Structure formats: C-alpha cells, structure tokens
Length: 399
Ligand SMILES: *[C@@H]1O[C@H](CO)[C@@H](O)[C@H](O)[C@H]1NC(C)=O
Ligand SMILES: *[C@@H]1O[C@H](CO)[C@@H](O)[C@H](O)[C@H]1NC(C)=O
Ligand SMILES: *[C@@H]1O[C@H](CO)[C@@H](O)[C@H](O)[C@H]1NC(C)=O
Image (tube, rainbow, N blue to C red; front, side):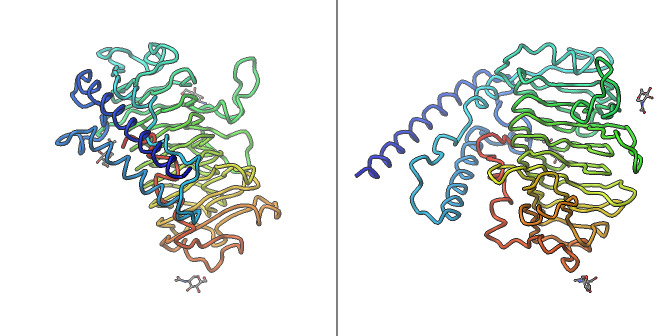
C-alpha cells in the first residue's frame, strides 16, 4: 500500500516537474536574443534543433541511466524512499541559463571592458543570471579571484585564438602584509563561485620549478566552487598547476601541463579527453589527490586521456590517507613509473587508497611492475567512474 502511494506521488511530482520545465522553456524562448539560450556553447546542437527539447531528452536519458546504474550497484529493484527524484534538474541553473547576458572584454577598447577584472566588478553580487564574459584574443596579465557571491560566470574565448590569462606568483612570494602567499593564494585564477564555466581559455602560471627548491608551488587555476566545467582549455604551469580543490568538476578536451603534482586537491572530478603533459625533469607525480576520510565523496577520474611528456612519473601519490584516482581508457606513455603509484612514504595508506586502472593502453599501462595495492578494475568496479554520472552531471552539465 505504502509503495503504491509512493509511486503515485512520484508520478505527480514528475508531471509537475515537466510542466514547470515546459513553462520555463517558453519564457526562455521569448527572452533570449539568440532564440536559443539553452545550449549556447554547443553550436553543433543548436543549429538545427530545438535546444530545450534536446537538452531535456538528454537529461532524462542520463537520469534513467543513472537510476538504472544505482539500482545495479545497490542490487535493489526498488528505489529507496529518499531516492533522488528531485535532482533531475538544477532549477537555479535553469533560471540562470534562461536569463543569460553577454559582455565583452577587449584590450583595444572595443569591448564593454578592457580587463577581465573590470568585467567581474560589473556583475552584481548574488548574481542569478549566466554572465558570459567573451574575452577577445590577447595576453591578460591579471590576477583573478572570482568571489563566491558571483555564481554563473562563463569565460569564453575564441577557439581559433584563445586568450591567455597569465601570472607568476608562487607560494613563497610575499603577499599582503609581507606574509608568503602559500600555494592557495598563488593561483593566477581562483574560482570560489559555483557554476563557473570556461571555454577556449589558456590559463598560465609561468613561475619555474627547480628540483629541490622549496616554495615554488605556482598554481595556474584553483577551483573551489561547486559544479564547474572547463572545455577546450589549457592549464600551463610547473609545480601544482591545477588545484582541483573541492566540489564537482568536469574537464573536457583540456591540455594540462606541469612537473610535480600538477593536478591536486580533493575535488570530485571527471577528466575526459584531456592531454596530460609532464615537463618533470625527474621523478614526479601527475596527481596528488587528497581524499582524507573513507566517507568523503572525493576523487579524480580520468577517462580517455593521454599521459605523456618527460621525467619518470607516478600516476598518483597519496596526499590523503584515502586518496582516490582512476585512469580508464587512457594512453599511458613510457614515462609512467612501472610502480605506477606512490603512498608518499606512508605504508598505512597502501590499504586505504583507491588507485584503479581500467582498459588503459600504451607502454606505461603494463601492470608487471605495479605496486601490489594498485587495482585492475572489473567492469562493475569501473562503472561508477566512467561517465558524467560520476560528477552528478545530469543535474548541471550543459554540454
Ligand atoms: C614575474 O613576472 C614579473 C612581470 O613580468 C617579473 O617582473 C618578475 O621578475 C617575475 N617573477 C619571477 C619570480 O619570475
Ligand atoms: C572544442 O574544440 C573542438 C575542436 O577541437 C570543437 O569541435 C568544439 O566545438 C569546441 N567546444 C566548444 C564548447 O567550443
Ligand atoms: C611488461 O613488462 C614486463 C617486464 O618489463 C615484460 O616482460 C613484458 O613483456 C611486458 N608486457 C608487455 C605486454 O609489454
């Protein structure tokens, strides 16, 4: 009986959601200057179709697959009473996308603003709309920190000539009051806001890293906001290039370069179709993932990437006791240390970390020399990591 009522309520809820979405859709169609506000970043899809319908279909399909996956994973045929029926769409994001605006930044004075920081200063705090900052080609020497009060910001560059945002602060450079910046403050671009998107942008930190010298951590981008996505971006640095600090993050078709621990933090992130280029001179690690407790939903998943470059690198070293990293369908070049993974000299971490490999290829994927605690994942074990469901994508990814 209780079950029947539950199903009935679910049905009502679903119908209501659908009605709600359709109403929003009509608003968005009439208010959008381009006539299609919902998939602004994917020209292939917006050209010939009704973007909203496609997006909805896409989300429903994702949701269906995710629910199916959840059931498979829990072995239960019946969704629990607290099943995430309501997470189908993220309504704050829908509102923001339906009311988006665009401003331009150009160093030659032909845009709305001549620097990225000016454009950010022009956004009202507690912003609820998607603000697309279209950044014209050029090298922008700016230190940027997007405050938590400015969600829904998009940095959009020209795919044929992406703008570069550059800096060279390091952890040991003196900041305000003469105290060293430390790694956290060294970032050229720091994203503290939720729902950030960057497309076709080159992020740099040009400070060099010399082997054995301390205080040279030099972050190009720190992402501390939730639900952030990066498409076609480059992250160029040396030690600690990309501080994948915390939150759900998605990276697609990105180029990420560094020497030591160049992707680090405790984000829950999916990296798809990315190119990870090591410029290490000797032993180093691609990742330093910082999951510190077994209860934390934190970890990096790399799907269909390439790992190449110089030095001899580990795929990961355990910054946190429960560090979690999975590489799947990835080409691992010969620079990968045969051991594969490092416990950072703390053997108690061997039984706690989760370091998995699944269907990787290339000379670095040979498991012969691997540490005994590295895992070769089964299909079942790999499943949670190898789709956008890993980052709850169906509720917030627009592309
Ligand atoms: C950082 O860049 C500035 C401006 O180009 C330069 O003056 C400074 O020497 C650089 N600092 C380091 C540590 O390379
Ligand atoms: C990213 O670049 C690819 C070509 O490499 C292009 O097809 C795609 O549309 C770009 N994506 C976005 C979001 O601009
Ligand atoms: C893997 O490495 C071992 C030891 O170096 C070697 O004997 C073996 O042939 C390699 N396997 C492949 C498939 O290359």
